[in-house]
Length: 343
Image (cartoon, rainbow, N blue to C red; front, side, top):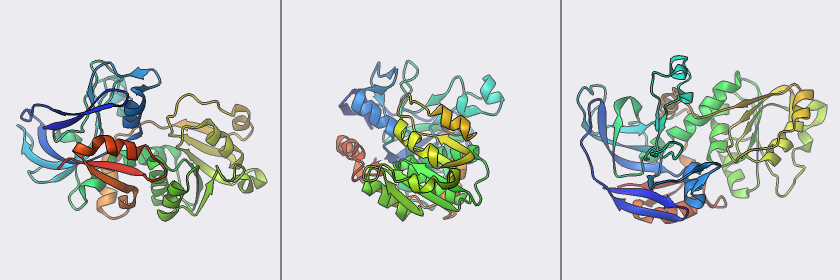
């Protein structure tokens, strides 16, 4: 089978690898679609991010879906031919955090395509994948591309859950990459009344408007574009900060109502925080990292037609055009979500 392997920054290769049969409790999946995530781009562009660096070749990818081709011993709840979205999250189930009910903080997490541990956790950008049956969410009725969006959707559903009650709230979303626009969809599904989105790109803001934002602001054109939301101590109850940029966080704080909630999803690196403004407004700053049970919820919502991610899939390229796909995914003037077709 072919796999997409990163060796170093800008050194992405298509390599042949062996296929083994599924083990007990596993299913073998013919991969159909995989979405290129921001972390994949960091490995491609920089060889890692922060202190996490590539120390050996690694198969990339963790936003994937495909069709079951064979069942390992003991698997009874899946069938050959089913389309499944595959969760990349494999907590151990035994550490203190798993036992406390927060498996996204598992101390022994095996997350596809991660250079955090060594040896690295190999990813899922491959034509054939053996996965635990427990990782698979039946996605029949969706396209493979839609099913592969379950992972980033789960990230935003998790953040929406942590933000608390959303019904009737006013929401600010800063950064309209995939996580930002999915945050708009998640917040709206949870009952948000007014959603305003900011970014530096007209293309991404147009997508935000298309999928349901009430208003958008291009902060490159109008750096004070949020000033109109600062009257009477602010407008927004919740901010989803999805850019990872300190400037976006600082610009949003004055538009927040007292005792609002700032959800930090963007992982652009360490940021300076306007702590005095947070304190004076009694704002709550919360981090949100990965997901667990929200993966199955996201697939269910998509299958029921309650969340439509299809407009976000802007490009699909074959596995042999992986380098081109990564270059397109890096260009926010034309791409929201670029995916690989493994067929």
